[in-house]
Amino acid sequence: MTDKYRTITSPAEASLTEKRSHFLAFAFPIASAGEAKALVKEFTKKYYDARHVCWAYMLGADRREFLSTDNGEPSGTAGKPILGQINSLELTNVIVLVVRYFGGIKLGTPGLIAAYKESARLALDAAEIVERHETRRITFTFPYLSMNDVMKAVKDPEITVLERNFDNACSLTLEIRADLAESLQDKLSDIPGVSFPD
Image (cartoon, rainbow, N blue to C red):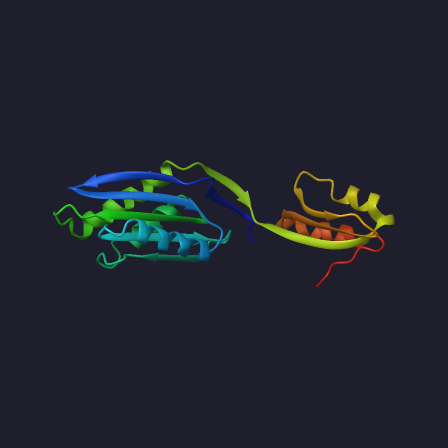
C-alpha cells in the first residue's frame, strides 16, 4: 500500500466557451466525501440559474473512492470526462465542478465530452499540484520520569505534535506519515510507562 499521493494545494478555476455555451470549472482540495457533497450543494445553490452543475471527485492515497455525475447531461458526457482528467494527472483528495450555461446551440455527445474534459483540464492546470503522504494520529500517555526518552523518540521532522499535556501524567498527540507510524509506536512502547489508549 502506498501512502504517497498527488493533490492540489488550493482552489483553482478556469472557463471555456464552446458554441456560445459557457463552462465554468472549479477544482478544490478535499479530505472527505462529506466535504465534496457540501461543495456540490453550495455550487448548485450559487449557480441555480445554470443548466447543469456536473462534477467528479477522487479520495484516498489508493484512489479507490470516487464519484461523478452528469447532472442531466447525456450519460457519460460530463462526469466521466471530468473524472478522466483527475485520473490522467493521478490526483486524489480533489473535486472538480463544471457549471454549464447553455448557449442555445447543441454540442452533441462528442462536443460535450470534449468541452467538459477541456474545462476540467484547464481548472486542474491552474492548480498547484503537490505530493503528500497519508498521515496517522498517535495519542499516548507516559509518566513524567520518562519525559526525556519520549521527547528524544519524537524529535523527528516527520512528526508534528498536535497536543501536549505535561502534568503528573503526561500525554502527547502526534501526527506522522502512515508508513512510519508503526516503527514509532514500537520505539515508544520500549519506554517505561508509555501506554496507548484504545
